[in-house]
Length: 335
Image (cartoon, rainbow, N blue to C red; front, side, top):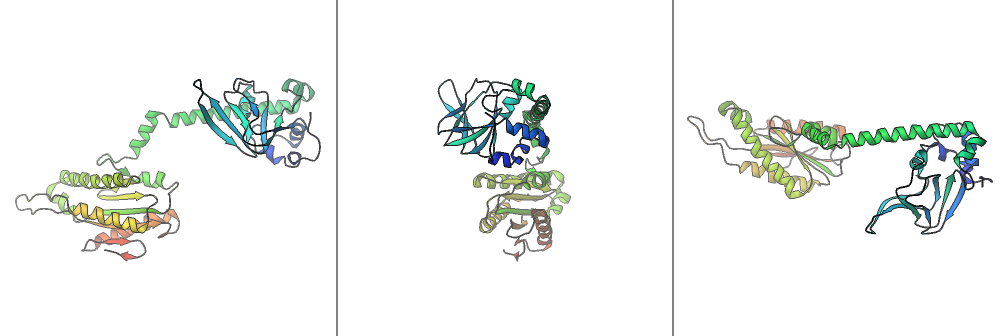
């Protein structure tokens, strides 16, 4: 049964243009495809296709919703997806002329449009109109190739050894903290507001390194890193980072200004509570303190790209003050 009448589908060929299978077809080819589609009304719970059935049609959902699921051997049903208008169902299986490996049924009264329509098959259509069907078959090959490449890329990107290399590229080897690249390349993609950044810089650290060597400085940074890691562990979410040298940070999603200030004060207190480096010869003991600042995005800043640079400048300004303190972006010293 071919499509006839002034239907929504006939009016809106954009629906087909936006599907992988029919993308790029000419107006003439789209007109033919539409003429060989037909609507299929479904009642709630009615099956559209079943696992093991040959995919001889694809479906565009006009109204309602359809769920796709698998039934395991033990009878457990795994829901895979829910489709709503104007989603397309089964196009990849149809393009490959494969067997469905899942079932689809209406979650409510629904209408899908089938291509080829009821009463047609691709062999018949190829004899009737070789040129447009050849174009549809070509689009099938393009779609299959594109999805296979995307799948291969996804598999490659998620291979354990790739994930391990990626993790290592974002890890500071000296402390095990995340590095600045992780902040700029990963955390900046989708920060969960309110997103707090707390930056710390130990005071007089150059004196420690110059007087006792880099090993003493490295040991001090490991102890500070442990404080940051424990802070994140207790909170249950967030990241501890080493920005460079002796500058470290906490990146905390869904963290308010009040919580950020409390955490910053707690970390500063824990750093000050570290056991001093013992006196050696003429060198007095070295006690740890740290200057800090924090900001909350987007409350304390405009675009995300401007947030960290402004906060980092505030850290250096705070650290240069002879009296260690805590400052908030846009508000000056708070402690």
